[in-house]
Image (cartoon, rainbow, N blue to C red; front, side, top):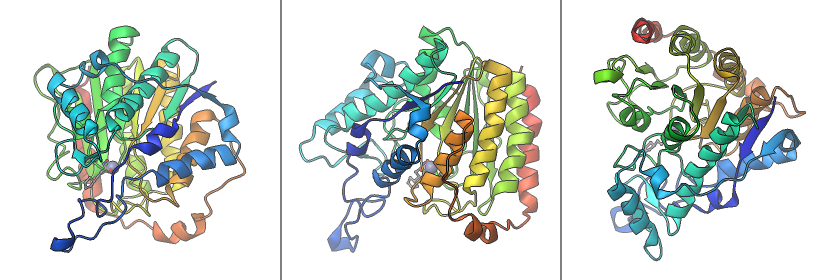
Length: 371
Ligand SMILES: O=C(CCC1CCCC1)NO
Ligand SMILES: [Zn+2]
């Protein structure tokens, strides 16, 4: 079993500026400059941990390439692709992808193309049998980007571009997208909302971002009715809730859909230390969730599971969640264990939230619409 790995230094050069965490600095309005929360640090530390612990040697490094405009416009409008290029060409950066929360630095257009192209190269390697599964540690993230709007730090929808490439060029007709980033995968859902050939399943903190998005009743439209599933879990949801959602919704849905490829929008921002959500997953949670998804991919589609890094903003804890994920993806272990396991053991004594069961049951009921 071979695991592919995509990383490139340029991903760390996507400049999100000195936005005050989330918003452009505005000293006269009392908004002090600060490093943007979507900065290279957490991703760099993931890569460094993978290298330092020796796991990099177990991976097949796949070189990314820049997605072409033709590949991008399978998903995005030509006008939107051009908008990102125009914003990226601004000398001194300061551009935005559309919602005021999604910085486009000088040169970010080519870096965002390299992120989408990294996913294309991974799904191609999987389709050709060069790898079984893979992980693309990319910036900028993508799952909020719709056909014509950047959103939530996302420029191009890396997962959606890869899905359409897999269908158009690799003969992988049925693609399932699982999104366990803490925030709703609204962009991916919107892009495929009326298309039954792509199943989207999003587990996220209810109502966190985008506001008022990702409710269970959002179940696809037209021919795509039944092929979008949402599990909006209440703040404070942790290991038990997410594993229940995986067992009761994700796995049965994948079984019924019988994908040729599983894509994972792999955000780690549902971890207990993340600043942009209020969920309580730990490295051990990501390990178990990944084990279940790898097993499903083995049973359904020759192990073809390709993950794109999305959110995950805690520079000190994200690396341990990512390492646990990668150890399960590769079927190996390293000498590094979660040094905060004892701390989080108390942290994550998850309060039983009756509403969690209702949310999961409501989503589970919709699984039978998949054929
Ligand atoms: O991690 C993210 C980004 C969420 C933020 C975007 C603006 C406020 C919350 N999306 O998956
Ligand atoms: Zn997120």
